Amino acid sequence: MEDRALGSQGLTVGVQGLGCMGMSAFYGATDETESLATIDRALELGVTLLDTAESYGPFRNEQLLAKALHGRRADAVVATKTGVELADDGRASGLNGHPEYVRRALDRSLRHLGTDYVDLYYLHRIDPGVPIEETVGALAELVAAGKIRYIGVCEASARTIRRAHAVHPLTAVQTEYSLFERGIEHDGVRETLRELGIGLVAYSPLGRGFLSGAITSPDDFAADDWRRTDPRFQGKNFDRNLEVVREVRRIAAAKGVTPSQLALAWVRHQGAVAIPGTKRRSYLEENVAATELALTPEDIAAIEAVAPHGAVTGDRYPPEYMKTLNG
Image 1: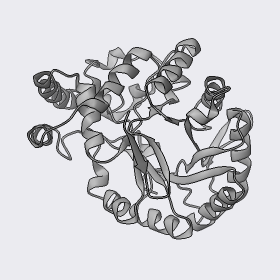
Image 2 (image 1 turned 180 degrees about the vertical axis):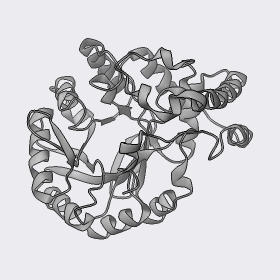
Image 3 (image 1 turned 90 degrees about the vertical axis):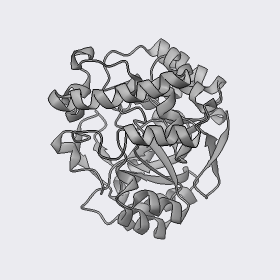
């Protein structure tokens, strides 16, 4: 797989990573044996960036990565996150960007990951009660201590990114970005990242699975799949968004690829490192094949025509979670 510089601070990763969240939480039943096999196959295929967070499980996803990487820690670029306050028993209590919590949470993540350093450590969400300068200052101290190599933030506004970067250079900003979610092209975030030399990591690059073309009804989800609460998968929003997917499928079919592969190739074409999540080897292999797909200017124009900014209806999250975005 082609490598790509993530930001301008020296970190290099495979051009496509792997989101590991669904292996432990949020998307229905899990299978540890298959998840471990999927991570193993990802490394074989040249995927190096493995994305997790202490809140995924909670903690179970980091512990899964520890098993997967036992004896070969150097083969992977491990990214994890803090900022959602968790007690040691996993109970969540809102956002916490205070330096003392960040330090404590990192030590806990290191224990769960079975390592003495994290390659990329993100602030998962911006705590509005703590100046970003204080949080990033603590992260900078952890870089100096050798516990983390590079730092990033998630779902931050352009203004917050600038303030954070002024304290310590950011390597990456992680945000939702796909043919279903193009907000960063219009709120100053993408422009700011390019100006400051910060890498873009795109989570949910397949629109939480919608762009795979495999979802035809909200009833396709398991009872405990959180997408049942996602506004984009409900009522008239679902029907409208399914029309967009059908158009993407049409373009993909004309190129002899799957809609997932087309959508991932588009994200790569935008300069981002996508981290599609999957818990099965078959989907992983389909996704990785997208790294070989070249898009022509005509392809890009056709995609833009059917999935422009604003084509998708519905908020990205339920109301309580929308409040934590663009911090």
